Length: 324
Image 1 (cartoon, rainbow, N blue to C red):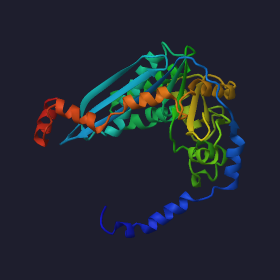
Image 2: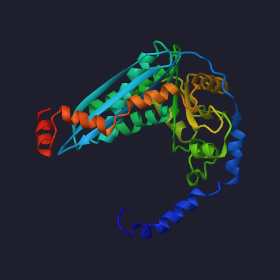
Image 3: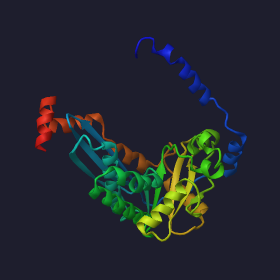
Image 4: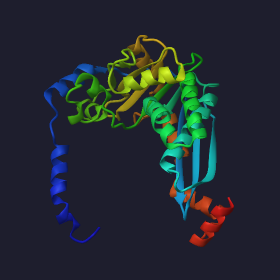
């Protein structure tokens, strides 16, 4: 660290400490307590699969070498994976293009996992994935990839809504304020994330009363994205049951999204999902933890790619990248 830097940032540290100790408004605490329902999981014992993806890249002179992968792991044994390696020009933003590729590979893994599993758990948020594919990607990718992003969003929803297997989305962390936006539309911008409040002010196993995003097309935040998805993709009926869950006392809070064709008894759907994914002693689905471990692409992995490509120096990197 730069000598003397602590003295220079002391004011900033003081402000951060104040924020971390900040007591939320009483109405927020009351909402969290009213939404939270205690529920002890009843493990279902059925075959479930976890899907996750990862990416990493090397920046060189004018080029980026990337590696993207995705895997699925089944609780009944087995799994599969796929990967892509390639080169893109550095003016193309890898933080847009590579997440796009990772979603394409996740879709492929969901298709495979559904063959042998009654429940497929996908790491991350469906709402975020749809927002990326329908809003961010079209304006940041070239025309061909933008069209593929729209097709990918439609395929993702088709798989998620198909009655053959239940597909749910689980996030280990989230900065979303969807519930704060719904219940405190005038003041939500001054509040913290939904995740923060449920993680800090609940302890028991259970779940928050599910909110059906998309039930009212005029609902704020994620509701507008659901309406956009219906229009752009020709999906006649789409709802997302949103809940925050914990499978064991003191365990991690997780954001659960369940895509639905109709406004069903989402409370029962959430309990069924909790029963299916419980079992990890740490309170997190083991299949998703293992999928995350296998999909993660480390710097060491990229060093191996670098050696395989013969990129031992900057000059070699430049020449090899031009040939690829």
